[in-house]
Length: 377
Image 1: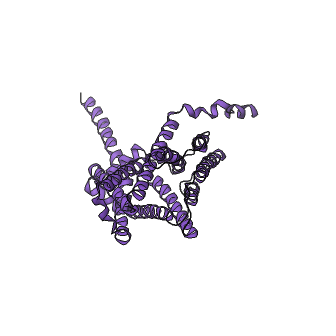
Image 2: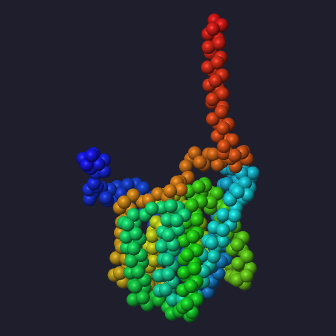
Image 3: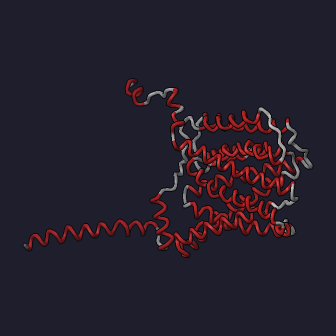
């Protein structure tokens, strides 16, 4: 019995633990994560230019344009693929969930950006990474993900890399004082928590429904929620768009965010919300590269080391197979059933009975008719 057990469960060699380096899936996830990190860097750079050079500070207005573009594009795709009736059925059956998801995303963006007005840059950067543990906790309870100890080690090492980046910023004097530290820190913690809920919620819906539905639906509601906030907080900032340079910067910001929101659900399916949060920790390093020429930043030796530490943390996260959520993932079969259900307005059980009944009826007719013809001959 002991020999049988040993043969059934062979021990992995050292090379097998790092076999993921040869996996295309790992490199796809790594590259996609860094593309998203670059998108976040683009949004940070354009927002800094708008604030420092043009004194234009309207984060809600900027995100409104992003939500509106995403909603227009992806709802158009949904109507094309499912028809107007199927698109309306989406609202009727799952609209409340997407409304909550859109509300959480809008308020997460608002509170994190607002926190920078009150707390220090150092505190904001450290507290913003709170979204990663939030994603881990929510993934465990909502998505039923069972993490191994090595995944926790990878997360810890990646966050240590972020700590090195923050320490480097303090050394180079990029930090600034807090106006109201308690208020700012609470805003940042609340925003980071909402980010975690938003990421896990979007991952959950992405594993259940098509991406064009998920992106189109929650941005549809987010657009109107954002519009209400604009009229409350930023209705006087619209005059700034008369300056073409400001308009150009806002356009670049919108493009970066459009790509970000379009690709994030793809990474959620290939990896997870936790992996997404780890990947974007490198955005500060890319921000330094842009800042050298645009803002006169100075480089310390800690930056390249911090970047390597973050990548090592992501790699360690992959030493054992990344745990898949127990809720499963979106498949072509599910996609086809859902499309037929929404376009035809029939239940899944009825649809399956119809699809299964047709071939069976044909077989019965064939087996009855052929013998009858033979007997007659």
